[in-house]
Length: 165
Image 1 (cartoon, rainbow, N blue to C red):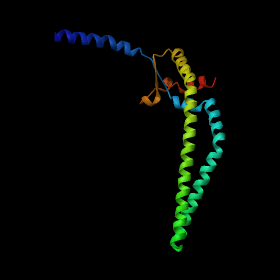
Image 2 (image 1 turned 90 degrees about the vertical axis):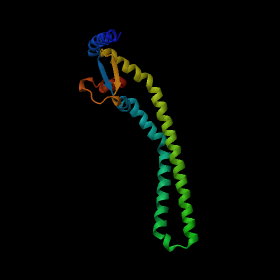
Image 3 (image 1 turned 60 degrees about the horizontal axis):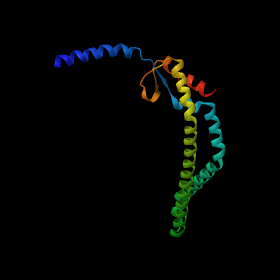
Image 4 (image 1 turned 45 degrees about the vertical axis):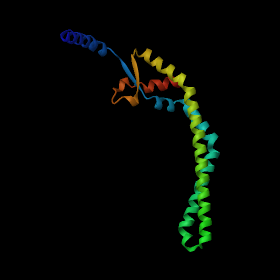
């Protein structure tokens, strides 16, 4: 029985090696292609324009907190305890305001980015499928999953071209 299994395993390996040799694999950096595309650049400009006011508020709160901290460190030793406590309280409030504004901005930006990615997904999938067929590949892997790829098998630039059509 074990002799049969050994022969069977050898036959399976003998037939699978040529099949593996014929497999054609391509690699793409989806993130690079998507975020270098014209749509992504337009999205980025729109995002910058839409949130520039919120970013200014965050920067302003950060600067005010920094000024209060500097003043507390510089002049705190010369202030009486009441003034120092009042200034420390103002600093803590400004830090809370900064954290709140920053978190709100980050959440809004991340939601917009996620919506962009979900909207772009069908187009990216279609472009990857075209690459697969045009290059007669059996498999396309993301670059994050690959240690090394021959430059001619890196199809990121071709994917970017398809996304920019």
